[in-house]
Length: 277
Image (cartoon, rainbow, N blue to C red; front, side, top):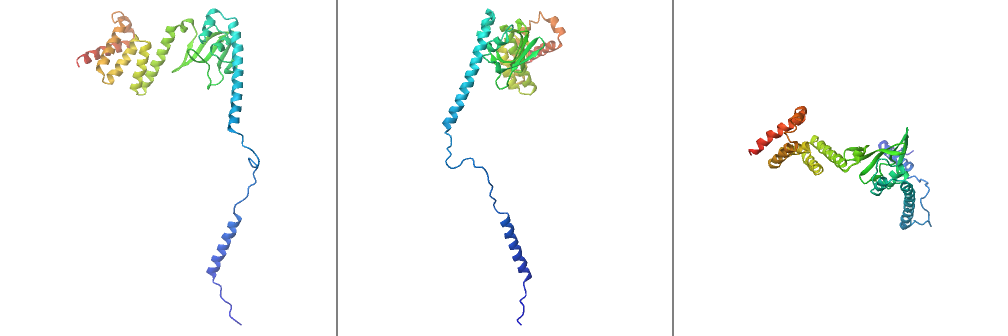
């Protein structure tokens, strides 16, 4: 009887492992996922021109609807307005004493641009969306407060927050220029606090165009010029600061206002120093 060949155990184990790997790979092969096709044979892709035209038609329709609403509001607004209010509407300016319809006429807006809330005996109007804030000739109109059915105050967004007009004196040209100058000065103050003297000086220069006789503003500019080693300009601004105060007449005020008195003393000292250079 012939001898039984011995099986190489190592070779057997390797062969078995290889077969196991092949079997495992076969089990984990690619799978077919049945999904609903986006398009099937015979479908046509819509032309881009058709999509654009559809969007344009919808946009034109929405614009026409808003214009119709605005025209209706404007007709109601001017039907009973006083000459002053009619003039303000013509200037696109929200004014005290207007009705809500006249506010919309002045801002060239329609009712859907506003969120209206009843507040006791009055009404508060605010923009319906921050992406489309109604504007008049003086800026973005943030809040309109009505007492009864008449505008009692108007708040507009400016550079540093809100500017409120609630009295006739607030609506004069001088008052509005002064309010704008104050807003620009506050911007400059913020830049000074942040250590950005270049931008601070630029803001102060803008404010000086609006308010050239502002004594403390001249002093702030003089200090910045002094710190930037521009002695000639600084000297002139210190002198203008003192001149605008008319020191002979404000001695009493200077003794009561410690900040102003300190500024006066510092300006006088710097003038002496800069004059010697």
